[in-house]
Amino acid sequence: MSVTREVVAVPGRADAGSSPPRFGRVALAAVVLLCGLTMFAGFLNKDRCTGPEFDQWGRSAPDYEKRNKAEVCYSDIQHLWIGRDIDRHVFPYVNGSITSRGVLVGGVVEYPVLTGLTIWAGAILAHDDAAFLLFSALLMAPFGLATGWLLGKLSRWRALIWALGPPMVLYAFHNWDLPVVLCAVAAVYVAHRGWGRRERPLVDRAVVASVLLGIGFAFKIYPAIFVLPLCLYVLTGGPGGRWLPRGARYDVVGAVRVALAALMTVVLVNLPFAVAGLEGWKASFAFQGLRRVDITTNSIWFWSMRPFMSDAAMQSLVGVLSPVAIVLSFALACWLGWRRYLREGSYPWVPVSAAMLCGFLLLHKVHSPQYTLWLVPMFVLLRVNWGWVAAYFAADLAMGVGIFRWFYAIEFGEPSGIYDGFAAQAVVIGVWGRAALLVALFLVFLKSETTFTDHLTPTRRRPRPAPTASA
Image 1 (tube, rainbow, N blue to C red):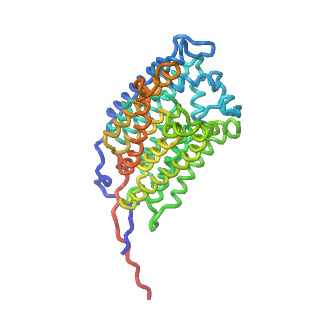
Image 2 (image 1 turned 90 degrees about the horizontal axis):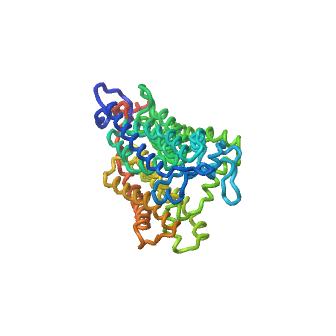
Image 3 (image 1 turned 90 degrees about the vertical axis):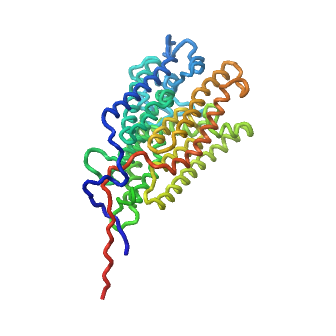
């Protein structure tokens, strides 16, 4: 006799797995308030590099280049005020291009289009790099607060890892990453909690989540990698396969809908820019493709290869190895997730997404310090031991502080060797400490449970009647 699953309401019962105690409005407000205070500390840290004087281009003076490294208050936001026509308030991409030497001109920035719009919007009222930093911080702060609110709704007090973690101080306003993190977290929230008071089918929730991931792609690309595990989650019917169509083993149509939602979102967001200025739109992608692996990229590729081969050979080899290794890490994560699905009956799309992110951070040719903000929500959403969180934050702190002190020593003629001081040693700890932890976390995340539960109607198994014998 075969068995099929049917959704049946059971009055007075909670969903499979007891629901956590209610996390009230006061607790949520506390998380958001603490997040705001931490972001304010982060702004003050970056604001130390601004003023008190400004040159004719609105660049902070005196000794801006020396101060931002020596005092560890550098931010890409302030730095890029000059060199991308941001100070001239040029609307991005429309009239821009990239030169044969890889220099962006005409308002093009090296980021996807929604980040370019965010940059332009933050500069509208600014006439120097200090005002640009301030307006950009004011523009992005709501995204950080909303992320804290959603994480609190999902994972309760564990959201304090986001709200109070050192990465928020170091990187909240280092670059333009808060909007993209919100897109990724909002996708998880919608996929598992829906919106409004009415319960919605899994496919509908996943389609909206996929749209959010597509919007995230238009900010910083990385959320797009989460679409594949989300499709596999829908393909297998969600928790316990309870959302599969009756009699179906897989929901192929639902998975295709989810994939198309992300694809169409990416196209619709990018199309106006591609039509208005194709060369400028392509230039932002070309810039990333042409970016060299050097001392500023903080990746394992530079640190493992540069001592043993020429620069030209390294650039050529990494240009092939990095994307291939990233794709293989994605395939491995999805496969291990599938094996877990076969054991447990639910495809672990959030753990798989976290593992894929680890593979991307480890193997991409660029590992900028602020990428840590991408990873922090995974520490909240997945039930990993606090030791992993502390260890990663420690390695990241060594990198976040050490890299700028080391650049200062190199640029201004101070001793910068590995035996000359802690700055170079901190960078080594940061690069290889993060790398080792990302390898370990790849596996740890894949085995982890989520810190939230679905608000779904429980299921009860009913036997399918045996077919009657025909005469």
